[in-house]
Amino acid sequence: MRLYDFLVNNIFTYDKYTLLPIRDEDKYEILNWRNSQIDILRQQTPLTKVQQDNYFENVISKIFEEKQPRQILWSFLFEGKLIGYGGLVHIDWEARHAEISFLLSDDRNSDIDTFKKDWNVYLQLITDLAFIELGFHKIHTYAYNIRDYYFDVMYAQGFEKEGHLKDHILINNQLTDILILSKFNHK
Image (tube, rainbow, N blue to C red; front, side):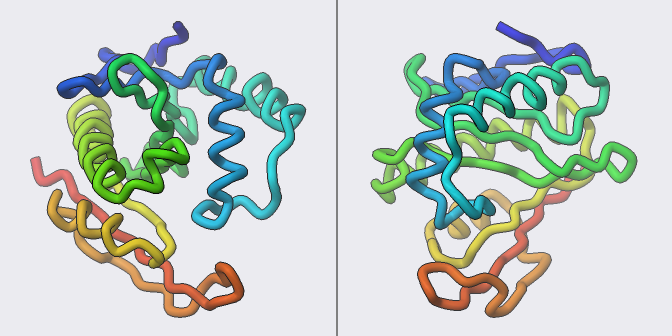
């Protein structure tokens, strides 16, 4: 298992959930999820295995060598089985903030109750990582306003709306808003 050298802790757990540095063995499952859920991602076209291999070889492998990478990615497990992935992306180390990235497996994403439970735990773990481990000031999401339950979980965890881009993106031939929700480290 690769480790992020700049972190004291590389494994975060809660109940039966585990967040650990992104693993090469997960790349094709992640590829499949990204392609099947393209409508909720900032991804324009389906990815190929060649593109995914190149990304893991030329981008992912290098973030483990950097002291302040632009992204820190994780495999998200439940009872030892991969159920999702994500991380902190678009990191600004000087201003100490980052965007939260998150994607669940197709089956867990399609079950709203399961999604809400997984998303809630993931947010707790990524918040601890950002605020306790890294001492960041703020974390935020940039998300399409197509799933109210996604934002409900965030509001319950103390995130607040910081931005609203009206009719900003075309999804399924319909103009859709983007919401930016943020949480601040007040400690």
